[in-house]
Length: 351
Image (cartoon, rainbow, N blue to C red):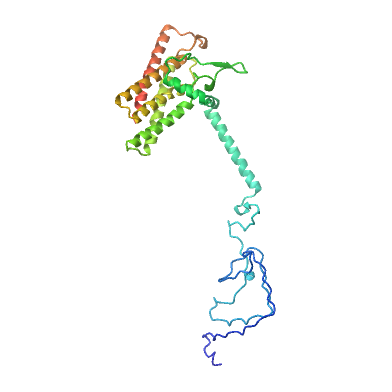
């Protein structure tokens, strides 16, 4: 024919004659469209649920003529598209109430139980290691005892640290256990018992106040927090090392535990905080110096009275009595420990 003289040219458009079928059935609802039939302007999405079968109409429109471009073929319904399997490492589609499937990650119930058992065994082994290696140096029960405080104890202890002049008595109280052994009462039951709660909280407060003081002077930087904390810890450890060394040189038997001496040395931070607050409130140079001197004297007097039971224990608590020469040397050592607080506190207030 004359219209198809050129095989590569498309045929002319021919409009089909419209027909009116007697009955058109309603298409069923699809999962993606609860309201009814959904038209697609492009290729339909992949159906994840059931596949819809194409409806057979009584009369079909004539198909369009084939075109030379293979990419523009006839329309393929969604039911003809094959379902793609899930990729490796991708979870298959699930319903709203379907359980989580861990098989995609290579896990099952036995593997999960084995992992939980190995994790619990590792935690238990770590706790045993800490108990065996650090339990002899710092007993966990002793640490808990030094944090056994309440609000009433903290208030009365702070008042004692700031105004220790008329406090009596200074001796610690003890009790008998069910096994018949004597042990010290916890801090919440004895105000003369040393604790670690106030020193730790005072250390943190001192670091924050030092950072605030630097910020008000427009010279704050994050390194100040680390420098201040390191300085405070080094000062506390030096004080502890000097007291322990003196007890060893003077052959002081039955001295308090390491945590007791650490707690006594940490009470100096309360006086340092009071001095820093006076500086922040800008009371003046004279008042600042007077508050520092008062804080030092209160801390020194508190240590003299509290450490007396450590340096000069009762005769019933020692195997051999203390002669006059030993007593004199121990009293001198006690005064040196108290006077050194002015050096430690002078270093700490320079922020």
